[in-house]
Image (cartoon, rainbow, N blue to C red; front, side, top):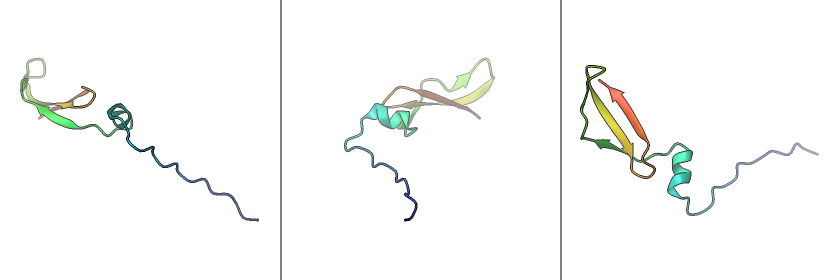
Length: 60
């Protein structure tokens, strides 16, 4: 007989937003309220996830 190969399970229908964010599929939008970081002394871009509210900051 041959070897048994494991297959990936299909995701359930109707994934919730929190499940998507836990898997790393955030829905980022730019928060334009804060553009300058005083401590860094640089311009920054603040991204906020629309679903879970997580923040990601990039300095330029």
